[in-house]
Image 1 (tube, rainbow, N blue to C red):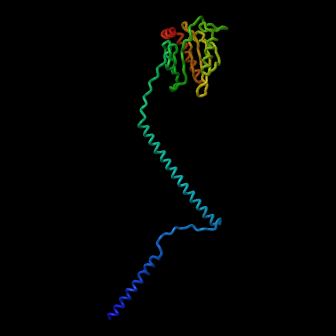
Image 2: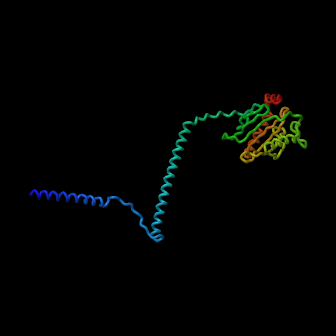
Image 3: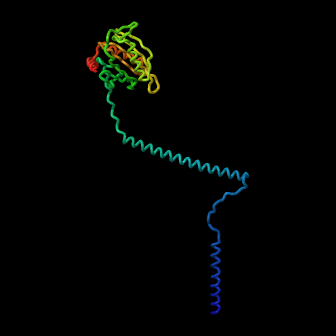
Length: 269
């Protein structure tokens, strides 16, 4: 009995020693539960199947590139929108309130009369009054000036030997020509016209504007109280008729009365 028990124990021990390594080896050698990467099936080059596979691969690449471009474009647009919102916010917080413009100084003629509508005082000298000419909307369309050319030396005459205050009209025309040469302009015409019962010498000229257009230049010469006055205007061609009418109003005012203060400043110059 004892011998049988010993023999049985030895048999069980030997059998367990052999079975455990075999079971372990079989378990390690068993199938792995891992997902294998799917490989593209290879076809003969340039066959129909190969071309189908090639076109599908190219299509996939194009779709990926298009998605990348769309994403990049969206990112750029978002960045621009954020920058614009930031700049707007900064401008609102940093831009000071613009003070209201001071009302333009009303133009006054040498006689003390009101200047024509739209004529406002500009920088002047004792011998020359300058005006800015605006349209009905308040935009500047030209300029005007009233100055004393010099003293009269005689009576104004017409006919062949035309004069203004004894000064030959040819000399006055030459003065305008010299001015136009300095200002890149040219004389178009000259004539005498009766205003307020007295002959007035008019020189019509033109000059080149900064924008390439043509500026109308009008020069009126008249004798008032022993002085020869010049009323000059500068405006676009479409405003020339309006300034011509207003210049004649200024001439009428000068014929009526000249302010003594302007006379004295001219004489002392």
